[in-house]
Each structure stands twice: as structure tokens, then as C-alpha cells.
Length: 231
Image (cartoon, rainbow, N blue to C red; front, side, top):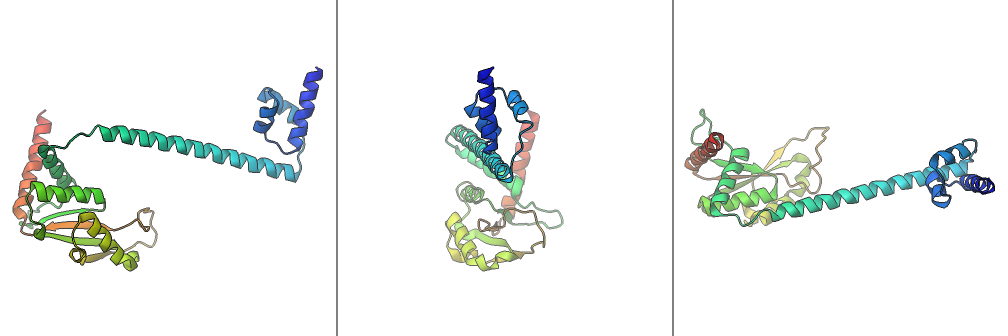
């Protein structure tokens, strides 16, 4: 009983100093329910309340930081393991990858507008690089047949040169290949998160005299579809 009385006195003393429940329990090893009962009648001053609030916020921040670190470590582990699952890409696989990319992101020939040229648009630099490799290596497109157009939000007019240099570096083509810039109107209010300094617009790749290739890609895409559905 004497021991419990001393523990209770110490608990009350620590609480009046502005210690949180967690801090007190780290000093006095008792049940949290007992702690709550002992402290239910203890009144705190403004200074003590402020300290407790500050410590709670700090503890919450530490907890959030720990969870964030765990999430990042998990993401990195998954990414690394998945990356290792991809071995050497064969010529056939590269061919199929390019067809699927164009099937998903490329412009299709319209019945009312026959003879459309190949057009592929994306803002992901890695996807742009892979698609260019596909055009040049697989489709044997000469580099001088390629045309580049940049589509940029109006609020980034002061970054035009920076954006042109960016796409020149991504593609490996001279900067004078990126003189065509088209402006996208900005909404007054938007929830988009990709309009900061990391935003470099959308790059459209066009190929001169490529209507036959567009039709081939349509046939390849249909062939992929039919083979998968049959299986």
C-alpha cells in the first residue's frame, strides 16, 4: 500500500509538471487504466496544458514520420524486386511493346479522315524515349521524318526555353526540332498537381508520310487482341 501511495504521488507530481500519459508510464510502470483513475481529479494550469498539447503533437509527428519511412521502404523494396523481374527485352517483345503503346496513346485513323499520319502524345519522358526507340529500331523510321510539337499550359510561357531544352535532352534531338509550341488554356481553378516547375507539358511525336504505318499498327493491334481473346 505504501508503495502504491508513493507511485500515485509521483504520478500526480509528474502530471502537474505537464508530463503526458506516455511520459509518465515510461517512468512509473503501472496500468494505463490505473493512471487514468489517479489523474482524473488533477487540475492543470495553462502552461502544463500547453506542454502536453505540444508533446502530443510531437508524438503524432514522430508516428507519422515513422509510418512514412516504413511506407517508403516498402515501396522501394517492391520497386526493386519488380525491376529485377524484367530481364533482357527481345526484339519481338520490343515490337509488341511499341504496338501496345501506340494502341493506348496514339492517334487512330478516322473513316472520315483517311490518310492520317502517325501521332503519339505523352508527358512521360521515359515513355517518349521507349517509343522513339521503337520507331527508329523496329519501324526503321529515319530521324528526319520525325516532327515534334510541345503542348504547354499558358501559365508556363516564361519557361518555354527551359521546356524546349528539356525535351531536346530527353529525346536526343537538337533543340531547333522543338520550335513548335502550342498553348493550352488554364482553368481558373484546378486540382491538377502536375503544373509546377517539374511540369514540361505534353510532347507529340509525328511522322511524315506515315499513313501506311498507322494502318499496319492498327492491324498489329487487332492481331494482338484476337490472339489473346482466342486463348
